[in-house]
Length: 134
Ligand code: T46
Image (cartoon, rainbow, N blue to C red):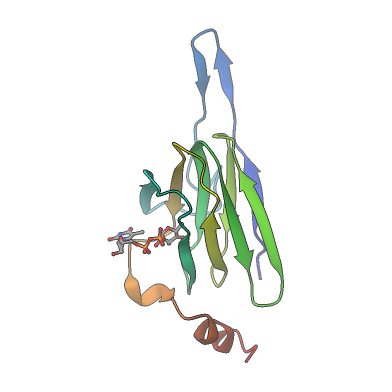
C-alpha cells in the first residue's frame, strides 16, 4: 500500500513573483481528472471525514494553512500544509479529516478521477471493515 508523502513542486522566482507549475504524471503520480478547491471555510470547521475507495489526491494550501489528519486504519499522521509549492499525496483507502484552517485558507485538490459518491466511505466502521481491520 502506498503511503502519504509530501511533494515539493518547483518554485520559479523572478522579480515579478513566484510561479509553481504542476504537470500530471510528472509532478503528481497520476493523471489529473478533476480539480476543486475549498475556500471561505467557517471558523473552527472540520472538512472531509471520509475515505475514498479508489481516488488518489494531492492537496495543496495555495493560500493560508490547514492541518490534514490521515489514518490508514492502523497509523495516524498529521500534516500542516502552509506553502503553495508543497502538496500532500493522499492514497486511496486513507481516512482524512481537515481542520485548523487559517483565515483566507484555500485548499486546492488535484484528483485522479471524476466525482463519484459511491467511491466514498463516510462511515469509519465500514472503512475499517473494508480494510479487514474489524
Ligand atoms: C476530500 C476533501 C479534501 C461535488 O459535487 N463535486 C466534487 O468534486 C466534490 C469534491 C464535492 N461535491 C459535492 C458533494 C457534496 O454535496 O459538494 C458537497 C460537499 O462535498 P464534501 O462534503 O465531500 O466536501 P469535503 O470538503 O468534506 O470533502 C472534499 C472531498 O469530497 C474529498 O474528496 O478529500 O474535500
